[in-house]
Image: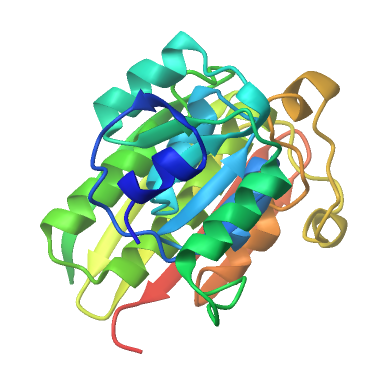
Length: 117
Length: 141
């Protein structure tokens, strides 16, 4: 599945389009950045309410495919600028992280484990 | 003999620039054709160290030595030092202030993540003098 396949199902707003053709192979939900750094699988869709530039940095360093801001969490301007500069995909949805995560999981197809390292 | 040596200064207390050194290291290693898994481990470990320097030590330095068999990262600061390194290595233990935690940091995972993602990890710290972390990631596993 690709990042672009998430937009319609999540009724997502595009905050930054860097590479919507990028593959998504799993989904991960968490807001503590060090926790995400240590545990989020690469190429995942990351659901969070942290819309700051440090979240963008984590996404770059942990090879995350797309940040999805849940419950319309704000993405501040420095974060948007950094996402543009660093080529990070960022979407925003009104759905809570858990519900959005379930949708991404369903889109990944039956039989795909919830966590994939 | 090292193929490449990199040096970065990490500014203290500046969250807007936190991660710049780690991103630069990641890009350099990518250009060198190092495997993505190795790069990811190094990026995670150096970022955690970089963030620790910003939060706790008013900045520091990162030196990276790319050798034929391994990449070594040496992180040094002249901050307050860690009184109990064994406690600091425990997952979930943190001394970060509330304002730092509101940014999403301070989960007490920094040092444990650095150890988890590297093949060799050494933490030396002295109160009032500073902290030095040396990490090594093997290239041929």
